[in-house]
Amino acid sequence: MASSGRVEKSRARSHSRNVNNQLIRTPRNLQDTVTIRAGSLALGHDLITHRELACYYSPVFKAAFNSRFVEGETQTYELDDVSPAVARLLIHWFYHQELDLEFHQATKARTDMQLCELWILADKLIIPSLKNLVIWELERLRIRFHTISTHCLNYVYENTESESPLRKLFLHWCAFNMVESRFKEKPEHFPKEMLLDLAVVQSRALPKETGELKIRRWEELIMLKVEEQE
Image 1 (cartoon, rainbow, N blue to C red):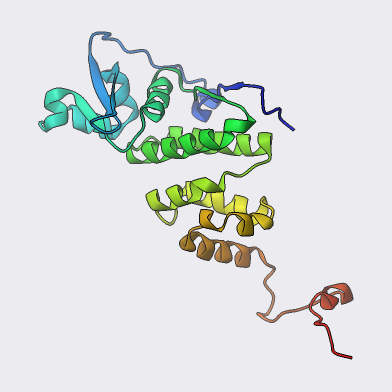
Image 2 (cartoon, rainbow, N blue to C red):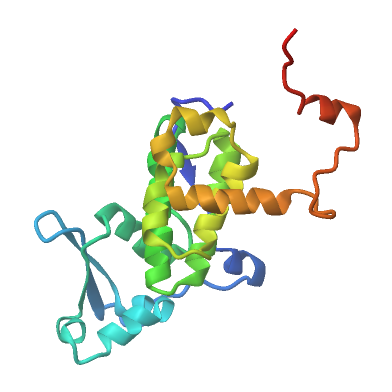
């Protein structure tokens, strides 16, 4: 079991770089930068990154910064629904193709939420390699700390589509890796749509025969027996 006081550093790298030995991209024009404005107008932060990197990794940024719209005129892209911390993770990934995270067991839930936010941001910006890296890191943290951050479920379901890999990851966890008492302990964590999806996942995992309930062993039949009156 991981110690709650030990701070760990994640250096999870993009899978494509590990497999294909893809070099980290270095901007050629160091003076050519853009601004990513993260957070609300009152509490937001302006984060500077090189235009070449933003446009190389995200077709959304490429279209925006090369357009005649306000983003192209000002070379500023507003992410008003993204926290500065998550935007910094994105920019760090541009330069290093890795996730720059510090965490320990006590803050694992917060780290998971940041990763969910980063996945959803990468989905909006059409950066599939970053999405894959986030999924890998979420699974690694689950195995490392033996916990599932169900408090993320409402956020995930509010910000993803039905076939989202992020939804599927959480569904798989809840179906096959979570203690059943969690549903009663934290019912507010489980949106109705998720519970319906969960029923489908678990029904597909059951062995299919003729559509009838077949009990092969006497012990299984005993489990269905109700208590009789004397």
